[in-house]
Amino acid sequence: MSKLDEVGEADGWRCWLCDELVDPDMSVNDSRGPSIDSITTKSKGKGKGNKGEAPQVRLAHRGRNTMKGANEAVVAWPDHLFVSDPAPIIASVDRLSRKSGRDIMARCPTAADGEAAAAWLVDRISRLRPDLPVTVEVEPGGGQFMVVLRA
Image 1 (tube, rainbow, N blue to C red):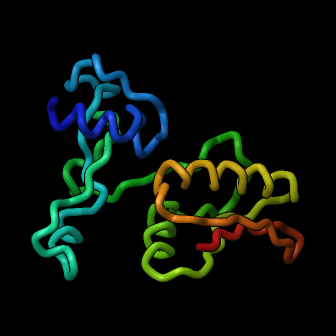
Image 2: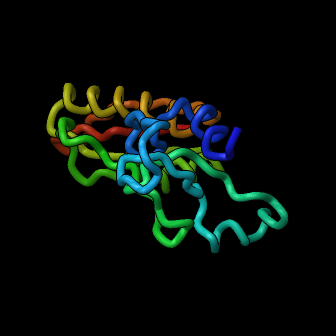
């Protein structure tokens, strides 16, 4: 079994960035084909605490691959959610995994929009970082509703 097959099986053949299925039989040269992506950048992988450790890898579509750490990974908020000022999901999850606490992830105009965003966020993080227990709350304030992530 190849390294790509091992990573693909471990991730359920889902792209860790867009959360869509990756076809294992598609050409690795196609932008929708499978590739192995490093979760941490090269500079972070060589930093304190990572000496001698292999970089963490996940399955990604070739077109979404962050080019071996040259670019920061981005998990996009879906267009169907009505959110403003959305926080970068990966950076927030990384920060909360290191030191628990809370992050305001987005603002929404209605409680229903906030609840929809909160449900999506918990579901998405459960696949992005299954080892990180999180809760999401929708808090009113200033005529809007904040989506608050806690770990």
